Image (tube, rainbow, N blue to C red):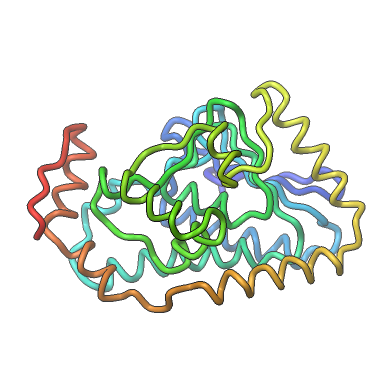
Length: 257
């Protein structure tokens, strides 16, 4: 798992997304490995808290590696991708142990939703947050991703963030509830470990029950199957244009078809 590192320090485990040269963009295999890591850590009775972070200081995770979308042609491609992302987001959210996202750089697209699937988010001042799909690829958010965002900032703010496709600075992210704490970059790791250590001392059954109750509330807000909307975007000419434009570093020429 060279692209996914797993470390243990007493009762605290740290999972590091390890593609700093690609701003920790997620490959499909990394999503699967992250799911496997969550399964392993949840079964380990010695682990009381899990930290999720990205390697380096530029990005927590910059979303999915866009090159993988070049081969998208069928409904199975589109629905399979969103199912893979939803599977790992649901697994992070279902962890019985507290999860902390240490956001030492940008959390964008899938990176944002992985951070939102964690219980608490601590960020460096230079970190940015957003899901600018309306400006970049022209794709769509799966129900799990949308439900996490709505549960965190409310429907009106969630809609505004997606429609404007803007990236939110750390200070604003804290003000609107996307982030719980903001600390200087040099102090972020120490503060995250300190908080993880404190949580590791708390009653595990109380924490697990609280997490599960919250997860059920978020699940109740899920809009259900949105296959028709997912396919309307992923199988469009606009999506193919968005992928090519992103990789060619030019503005997309949207046609609405």
